[in-house]
Image 1: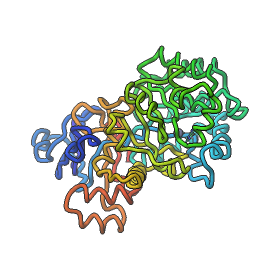
Image 2 (image 1 turned 45 degrees about the vertical axis):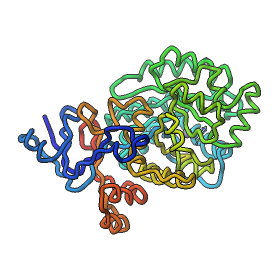
Image 3 (image 1 turned 180 degrees about the horizontal axis):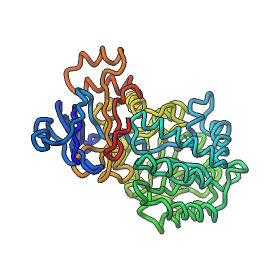
Image 4 (image 1 turned 90 degrees about the vertical axis):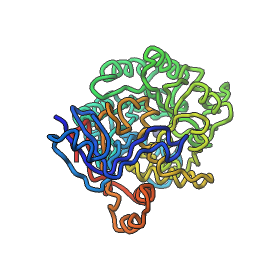
Length: 428
Ligand code: GUN
Ligand code: ZN
């Protein structure tokens, strides 16, 4: 059955980081035609109504229809410790994160948190995400089962740690990391809308043997993504140097063990040395920018414009619970503010791109999600661009779509999400 959704329609025809607002397409009175979980057509409402006269219509009025948001780096197991006070990265991990992740030894806890996480993500208009789990296979099972039950396109992996820097009870071995990651990969990768991601947490919590084992697993499954953390805080970089004295730099600790490649997604990547930057560009690796986390934990100011100009694929990410919000709107606002502190004003089109089409490119999903175009999977959101009195009075002055959208980017949250469709089905 063909179905029509009417509203303002925002989509991308090109890379907005490279081309700015000219990369976006805006249809003031537009429509999206859906059929069997996919987008059949996008265009002016009048044209699509004439083409599909028998199709039922959901008229969202002047709500803005967009591809659903894609969160490129999140730790769903940290849902319950979001907004924990007063620590920087290494102390924050030890004080809040590792104790909470230990609770995922109980599969019932993992199931509860996975449910809460997906409720929150969807309520905030996030229809795809790439998550870290914990060391426990049951944490991966819980995540994928919940995603599958809701029909969400989701990516995740078992977070591997075998070094004494990780606490007892949250440590595996190089062999266990390989075996359990492989078993999960074989069970989940490519099943329905799910993908497995090979996930060493970061160099400080893995031995060289474990990094090597996961590098081998990746070499056996090169179509999988590999995600990890890179150069988030200055203290962390010093720690890496002390643990890997022979390494040229932080990236080298991954490169040496087969964990550098075009399907790698590095979270943070704030304090890169010129060699690291050059290697990332050379191999075509991607970066997840986590601006609310980088300000919340005090990590630093990611160079969004510089990284994109160098040709690196970049996507936005909440990094919940290091990040302080589940909202990709709040994440766009933080990305804008961080860029301003570096002297760059990212255009609303660029911010939106980094949370949708650009995020999909980062995760190698650009043929499937992240844009409204024929053939794409029907993951859509409808945004109320006047969701609070403060936003409404500012948007009322807008003279074009970007002025109308920017107050929602800067001040919006889940109240702006007026509709969510996952695989063509209305979720809320
Ligand atoms: N580096 C290693 N693990 C983590 C984590 O869970 N959160 C953040 N923000 N950085 C990390
Ligand atoms: Zn992270």
